[in-house]
Length: 172
Ligand SMILES: [Zn+2]
Image 1 (tube, rainbow, N blue to C red):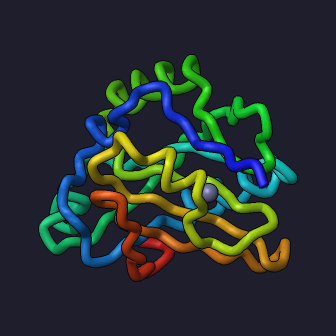
Image 2: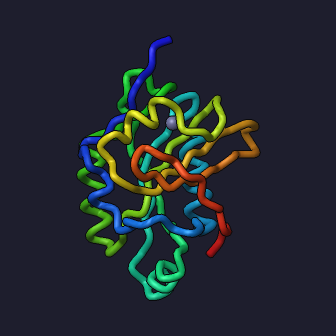
Image 3: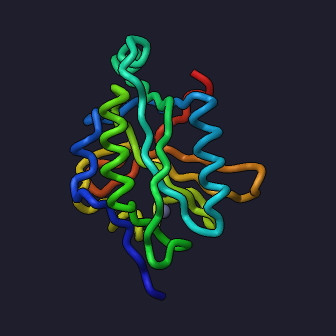
């Protein structure tokens, strides 16, 4: 079986992330949650990918102090992988544009998401190999055991290890 590797335009994508230490929990607003699921469904049968951000509000800063990684917006990125149903590759132009928008909107990059349209939300070999230059970042996998009932699992990735994070709540 051929294996594919995910890839990012920046080798060290987590350089842009504001989270350097493992959070205790992860949380997401309803709007971000729905936008992420919508993106993953509409890119089927291919894997969808993108980044997760939070705004620099005082509420978010409080949550950060309590170890809650909060997401309030998503930015879809085109998957330009040749076998996009088996792995993902961030489109370099989208990546540059989105980094600029995140900065302009005074947001922080807090994670990466992608979908597994037909497998469970466990990191694959492509996921592991794609992260070889990445020190640490939150990593969310959206899978679809049933189209209406997605299974979303956030992880904290650090030193070649994915640790599942508890999804605290949707709608903060
Ligand atoms: Zn994957």
